[in-house]
Length: 230
Image (cartoon, rainbow, N blue to C red; front, side):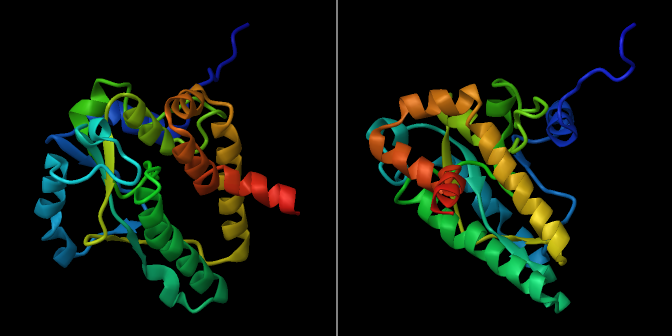
């Protein structure tokens, strides 16, 4: 007897990929349900869209060939508006997100050249991703951190990623310790799942040694080093 519940992909990436053909325009913004928008930030969207035209260096360690690639992802930071909730954990989570979403990704982008796609609120080139399998990898259990695979995919298939800090959107983060702990567990499990993927294997084989080490220490290697230290 066949089971009634066939194994499908993860909900969010499946919905993103299935919904892509029904979107309008040439660029698509990846916005989560716990994100907010500001009118004054919306005025900067035209500038952000012009970032896809290129006209600058390719980032840290980029060769002339890489700099000539089309820009397929433009990333920007988030503003954590739940910091004002008053809880100590809310303030901590907002600070952590501030460092990861702004300062850390600034360094990943340049000079390290290993800033990929972390889900939101990046703008993506719709045509590029429609012809390369969608904006996220949706295999159950393997692609737990589904968003970063869009970054791996576009670098492997001729795209380039930018990170700009003059535009941001609001972001609501969890404000109690149990949810924060569950979130960090999910992120660390996603990092472990990345190590089992073909995408990461192919990416590492194609990168020079300096960017391989940058990718290690700027991503999943953080959790490996933590385990070794403990």
